[in-house]
Length: 211
Image (cartoon, rainbow, N blue to C red; front, side, top):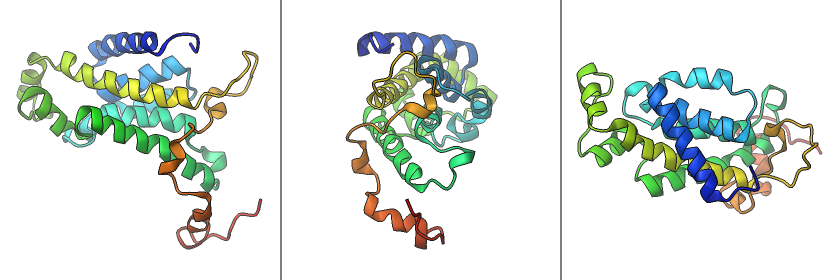
């Protein structure tokens, strides 16, 4: 995967997006599954299922599924799990990649909100919870137009993920989700280390961690 050019990877991702979207019609599941398969992310089955109702947040026109899905994928890489819930530094270090994703998505697509994206792409808003309007949306080119949005999302996320890939040997046995490093330059969006006390004292009511 690392030997391919970014253009080749974008092409592969785009093909996966359109194939999956044509099958499921779900931007959140499509974007997440595309990234999960491309980067061989662990523990994604339950998340994929949980994303079923996430397009527009239950079709309410709120956060686009092409934002939610990639954020879940980034969380598998940079986030913390049940055994590290008290690792507040890791919590801090998970924020820059997510914030960068949202910022770049908004810059390229125009919004992170489903209703606003649809209005921009289709010239009007649709109530996707209404069967009649949902059918009009599909007939107006939903797969192609929303597919373009999803492609942009997974391309942005893939570049962030590649920025965090360390130089690992092929024999490395650690889980993929545990060996990614924070992308260089992303920490400018994150709380600097001197703000650790906010997480360990006033905000959470915890004593400072001693390392």
